[in-house]
Length: 192
Image (cartoon, rainbow, N blue to C red; front, side, top):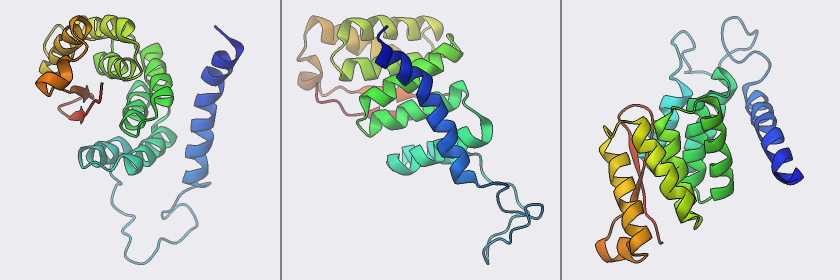
């Protein structure tokens, strides 16, 4: 592993924590913070989880806003497998393949059994032209999922078909699907 790769993997989580904590302020807004909420903001109710907000924004195509919501979630909940996976998926949708790969690999480092992160990493690898590794990663996601997710199963099928015939996706108008924990899906329109 080169020094640059090592430093990126070491510094990236630290940068995320610092960015998320800078957005949160010292104590937030609320009755115990000493700060007054803006007029019309009801702080007595619980806020919606940042991951939930991010997932909703992803579903509506607002990837930059989703990324910000995921950073807030990372600041509030910590850098978990779910936050790393979500950050990776948002970066992928924004075309930031290097950042997406880093985040998804971090998610897998935290939980090697998390099939959605493996699947989404496979999508990133295919998009960046690393077809051999992508196929292996899709196989891992499929095995971890026990073949239960139709999206992961379809991604593996598509990856195998593209390995045999690189023009398969264009000829058959197929795309890879990103998955997350729960019932959500994100469609990735590929130009490969």
